[in-house]
Image (cartoon, rainbow, N blue to C red; front, side, top):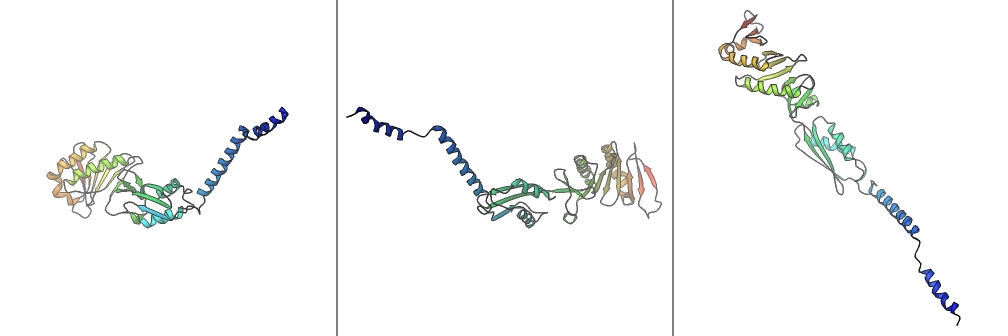
Length: 259
C-alpha cells in the first residue's frame, strides 16, 4: 500500500473540521443582534402593539374638576405605551394655573397615571392674581376665585414681605376686634391698610411697627368710642396721628391727636 494514499483521507477530514475564520463570526453576530434590536424597537414603539387603554387621576380636587384634567391629558396622550412623553404631558398639566405640582407615570401594560396637587390660595394679589401658601402668585380664571380672601398687593418680589407683614398686623388688629380687608405696599414702599369696616390706616414708609403699636395704645383711650366716625387714620407722624372723618358727619375735618 502506498503510504501517500493512506494519509490523504486524514487530510480531507482535517480540512472539513476546520472552524470558520474568527473575523467572519463577530460581524455576523453583530449584524444579527442589530437586526434583532431594531425589530424589538419597532415592535415596542408600534402604537398598535401596546395601546394606552386607561387614564387614572388622583389628588384633592377643590378648585379643579377631575374630569377637566382627564380630558386635558386624554387629548395629549397618543401612541403606544413606550411612545408617551410623560414630561411633555406633565408640562401641559402645569399650564393650568390651579395646578401646583403634577406627576405623570406609566403603569404597565396600558395605563397612564396622573397625580395632582392644587394651589392653595391665601389672598388675592394685585388686580387679577392670587397668592398661594408658598407666596407664589398665580392667575386662574376669575370665576374660580374663592370669596372672602384678603386683598394684598405690592411690587414684584415683595410677596413674602407683604404676606408676613399682613399676618403680623392682622393678629394685632384682630385683638381689637378689627379685621384687615386689604393691605398694600406701594412702589415707594409705603404701607396702607384697609379694614373691613371701610376705614383706612396709613403707616407710611418707616417705623411701621412703632406706628401700629401707637394705634393699639390709643385704641382704648381715644379711638374705640369714636371709630365709627373715622374714615382715614394717618399715622405718619412722629408723636401722634391725623383723623379724617367719614363724609356726611358733623364738622367733617382733618384733626390731630396724640395717643
